[in-house]
Amino acid sequence: MNILVIEDELRIAKRIVRMTKEFFLNTAEQITHLESLDQGLEYVQNNTVDLVLLDLNLNGENGFDLLKEAVSQSFHTIIISAYKEQALQAFEFGVLDFVPKPFNQERLYKAFDRVLNKEDIATKNIKFLAVKKRGEVRLIDIDNVVYIKGAGMYSELVLNTSATFLHDKSLEKLEQLLPETFIRIHKSYLLKISEIRAIKVSSGSKYMAELKNNELLPVGRTKYKSLKERMFG
Image (cartoon, rainbow, N blue to C red; front, side, top):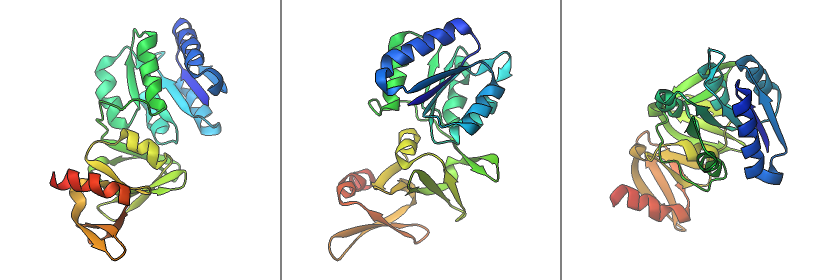
């Protein structure tokens, strides 16, 4: 893993780097520490990154400028900040976790467990999905997303306007962030439950979700039972 730490207080940065090395052991191929937003932006745009640990207040600069860019990328972002009142907004943008300062090893390790899918995210207040289009970052309102289709390492967002946007995160990473209103119906699809009109069974026991917009999406056999329970109890 290539991990980027963006923190302007050297003492805290050294502590974060040390704990990160101890947790990830041999899987942390490179841990880079930077002190400013400009350095962080330049780094994520020009390097392969797997995880960003970001302070939101760097020498008085607003970390949300970098956060918009970060959450649109393929990696997960964990905020480490003393500004607890910004936690809700950070989750709305799509961060994996918000670790309030002062923090201890146990709390930081809990955030790292989420990176490895070992712990579910209790707070899924995501309101936007950030996507890049023509070099700019756009915030897509979750309420406008009908379903998300896996596209290799990327994901395709399909909106209620029929517009589509490509997201740099994989379907698996988006599934970690999305609220309970979305459900995995197939290895390639995440669907908003409220968009389902009916579940249809065709010959050969093939299951399909009929959407309110008349589209048909495949439902995996292993997903059919949980989908039916969610819809009908």
